[in-house]
Length: 182
Ligand SMILES: [Zn+2]
Image (cartoon, rainbow, N blue to C red; front, side, top):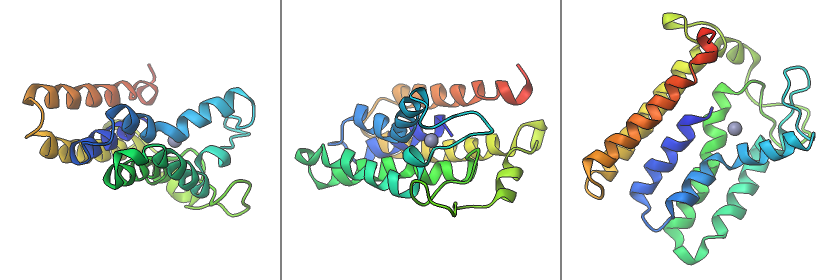
């Protein structure tokens, strides 16, 4: 999952104004940023056969990342620290149902969480021939954008709120390209 992570960051920004927006956006994507670095270093191969992302995406790793990252902002107050922790941890919750492989509870764990049948369902074509995963991501995106829009209504001009929603929905539509074979 990619684009919906940003909608969680936007939603949090409208309820935790003391948490910097850049930090919320970075935090929401943090496990993927770690994954990009580890994949480049060859520690977490991204190819389908050797796919491995326990260090960046396991439940324990996400909790550790969320805690370290959120505590960097302790001067901003408890509400900001909690918002940042939840935003980083939300990465695990959002990835869980649409991940290419089952996620580990902790790095190098034998049992992985979730079910292979669910992962298979996600990659099946759904309505309009687009993957079930894509529809699930769109649903999550719209859900958090609605929370953002309600919260941001009183703080930001309507145009800004609308533009950020349209931009994220547009990005989600772009991710359709591999689904439809472009
Ligand atoms: Zn991820």
